[in-house]
Each structure stands twice: as structure tokens, then as C-alpha cells.
Image (cartoon, rainbow, N blue to C red; front, side):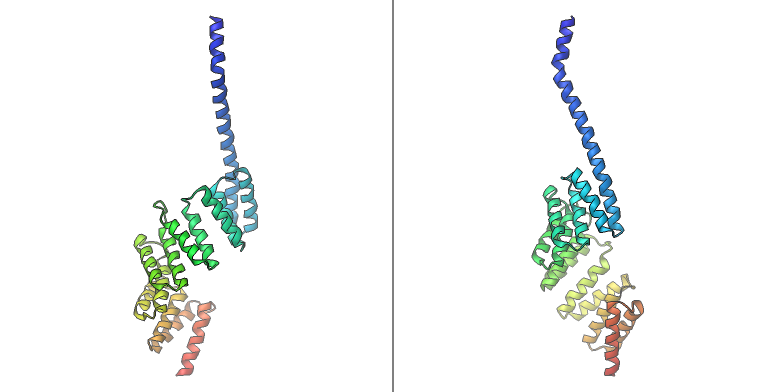
Length: 261
């Protein structure tokens, strides 16, 4: 009996050792991820505080512990971008996407960096990939960005099309005033002044404290020959934000109008 029992134990020993090894492995892996998460969360907090160098130290520490975490590389990309290191930011976003091709936020942010670098076709492709993911919670962001990329390329028709799609996808997005303002700019660029005015007015209705749409409204009225309306719009800009870029430009417009009269 004893010999049979011993044989059974010996026969089961490899399986027991494998099970033990797997348990230890899972526990170690869990602790590793936990350590990386501590550095990751600290880094995110430093980003929010605008402390990019300190944030980067935390992300580098997290990457050393868990190099195959797409989220770590995504936040490293954000940090490099915050430090003005665009090429390194692009590299980190690409690493994040190699680990998780469906990472819409990484596609969108990569597109944003390409926009700044004036690589508009690359930006458009990144935004397309971001919004094509059915699980992406903010497709209006990518669609608005696509619209802006087309606008910068001089393709106002496609820009307006993507702005319209952004509104259709997320009618309650916080970007609504920005999207209407961007649509106004595209129509203004095409000299479709009535449509431009409609969108700038819509922006002003939603966000009356924004100086930019008021300024462009004034420009539209000037182009239509309505100096009184233009002057009122420029006065509103100065009232809202006198020291901003649009506030200063509005003052110049008002001075020019007063000289003309």
C-alpha cells in the first residue's frame, strides 16, 4: 500500500510543481504590474501638474518594469510632446500602437502631432484609424481633427464634411462650439459668408465668452459691407478678452473703421 501511495505521489509531483510554478508566476506578474501601475499613476499626476520631466522619470521606471504596456508608451508620448520633443513623441505613440493597434487615443494623439508637424496626410490617416474603432468613446474628437487637417490642406469641402460627421456622431460633445467655429472658418475661406455667419453665430450662442468667433463674425460683416455690425462684433471681442490675440486684432480693426469714417 505504502509503495503504491508513494508511486502516486511521485507520479503527481510534476503536475504539482507546474501548478505551484504557475501560481508563483501569476503572483509575481501581478506584483510587477502593480509596481508599474504605481509609477504610471504618479506620472499621470505629474502630467496634470505640468511637470513633464518628473512625469517622464516615472514612465521610464514603469517601462523598465513592464515594457510591453501600451498605456505606458502612450503617456510617454504625451510627455515628450509636452516637452516639445515631437519626434520622440511619435516614436512612443507608434510603440503603443504596435502593442495595441486598436488604441484610438494613441492614433488620435499621433495625428495631432503630425498636424503640428504639417504632415497632413499622415495626420488624416491617424485620425481615420482612431474614429474607425467602434469602441472609441469620443469619435467627434478625431473627426473634428480630420476636418482641421483637410482645412489646412485647403480642402474645405472635405473639412466641412468631417465637421458635419463629428456633430452627427456626438451632438452633445463639448467640442460643439469649436466644431461650429471651424466650420465657419472653412465657409469663410470659401467666401460663403452667409453660412460662415450662421456657424459663428451658433458658436457665440453656445459659448458667449469665446473671443475668436466674435472676431470672425466681425470679419464676415466687414466683407459683406456691414461696417456697423462689424464694429459691434469687434467691440464685443475687446469686451470679452481685451489682451488676447483676437482682442488686439479687434482693436486694430476698430481703429481702421474709425479712420475710414
